[in-house]
Image 1 (cartoon, rainbow, N blue to C red):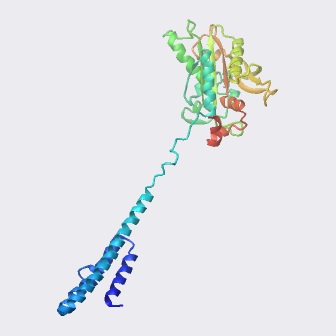
Image 2 (cartoon, rainbow, N blue to C red):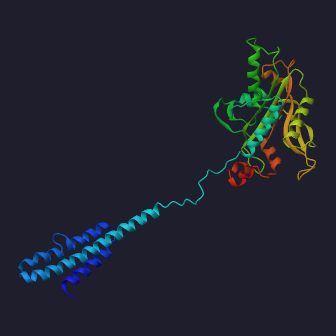
Length: 352
Ligand code: DAH
């Protein structure tokens, strides 16, 4: 192997090993650059005879061409590889299915609330919303549950900042304060500035108030946050039989069961007199034959009617408070209340 062959094969090897275009150009400079090996050989020809120049020159030119050919081939190979890599990186598989947003759905308790609103709406009830942070007055006192009333200890209350030492603010323990809030607004619209207890004429109060309520309580059937829906009907001739009719109609419609049986069991609430707990019984299905408590109710206590700004000699009515969470459990056969609030999509998506 003569010196030219050695240079050519060394150049070919160097080019083949150059991993990037930049390194390839560096390698090229070592052979074809101003001080490259081939250039140096050209310069060395000056000392040769004319005859030798011809043969040596031709040989060097051949070597140079071979090196240039190897250089171009490698340049092309590197460019091809780069293009391939780019194409691969930007590859678009048009056969893949499009990206879609997962389909959402209403929470089962929201479904129940909508259903309650729809059914009571069809019976002429308005829907009222109120604050979850309440004053002692609306949550207890106005509902005939004064400071030292034993019924207060039935509610394990979350107290919050604000209010006074005797009447601290709290997270409402039930939706019953909405009875007062809504009735006071309603009465204001018709009573004018007369003052005292209103005994004039006004349209009936017929309202439900669904929403979140809070108690210090947590197990399979209790959650510190839960839902209630209050109902209130105040007029001049509203009686306990109207309560029975309305609530029976509601339950049968809600559970889509015309044979559902209701029981009004005597009970006590400070804001109603008489009071009743309402139990239902299915006549078929897995829960058939058991009494299931769904609501508290009663005839609104005269003291509460007064706190609404109404004269209890003229105005009378009934109220009820039910648990939409429990209604949801009964309707769908769910046995653990906490499932509703864990936010596990595997559970919730079953209600889509
Ligand atoms: N507020 C009661 C509770 O949370 C439920 C209740 C009972 C509401 C009787 C009422 C009622 O409106 O008349 O236990």
